[in-house]
Length: 352
Image (cartoon, rainbow, N blue to C red; front, side):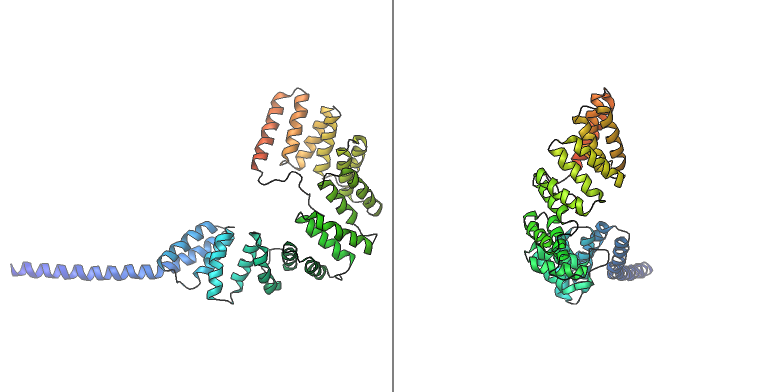
């Protein structure tokens, strides 16, 4: 009986020791697991998997929310995942903890910028200067955009002038500002900048072109034609001018003149899908579906994601009696349109 008692006691003590060792081992695991998950999160970020990194770092935060550097790392992960509002929350905390953290400041500035919160982004962009991350837009451009969007127009022009190494009161500075305003769809504000640029230099290239683009955007094709013609006298080998002259003439029903300009555009740039698609549309209006199909097929070979061109090609095929092909093109067009979000009725094209 005594031997049985001592045997049981020894067994109990062994179990207690084993349990203690297990507890210590578990504590050790908990103490190192955040570091292991941190390293794994860093690896995931380098692999372009920010959502997985966010999940790991969030688990670390649940266990130990005061882990040094955690807020900065979470902010970086959310920023890479393009969840800017969440990134801002963590990055602001990170900067409160470490005000000299330049990487967090960079990510916070760009998060505010991408959220469209230019007023909050501006002081950070001003402070960072040239220390914004490589791979993003140059800091002078970001700074100029912030000035424009906070209606500090003169500062925007000064910033662009510095960017292009021209005097702030030069025609080129006013033209650069007008281009930026047009990109932000602030076309009414762009017009006086272009007029000033032309007063300073009547031979300035692209100023009349941009005025014509604004006229087209505002559904004033006749005024646009006049501006594009002025540009053509200064800039006779730029395919963009011929393309937009073709577009403007097509809008007012001058189809023969439009075809002439569009073909000249293609001669100057045979990779112009837009000119080919417009020629296809004109051929449809002139009741020549075979010619239209040829132009539209060539245009779509260069730009297969053009939903409107697929729709026009469907109409051309239908007129040619190619019902199956017509249905297929209509379905492609519908699918592409379904993928578009927040499209404008009359979007401005890319400003050259």
